[in-house]
Length: 132
Image 1: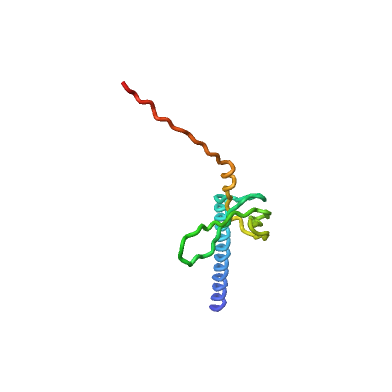
Image 2: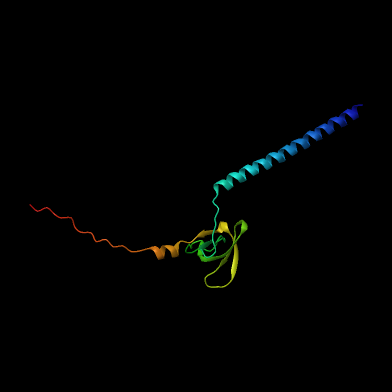
């Protein structure tokens, strides 16, 4: 009888462990869903339309010492936008297209600023002096 009772207790312990494991999986899944929802709520969706100019982030590791260069590369033109943040870009000097994730891009404002920027000159006069 001792072996049967010990066997039944062992089965109960294994069942409890399995229930704890399933509960841990559920808690982990719920935590991940909540964190993803919170992260997505605070992150901006970057939407670029075909024809816009964007800068591409160069994330290669640089081990060579020297003059620091910008990590944002020359403006590329957006040729096609696919779902889930995939963009086809064309380089100004070549006809090749590259596929990149939208997280590596930011809008280039250089051309718009150059076109709309006007130079205004104001000539300042000396204030009149009071001579008594």
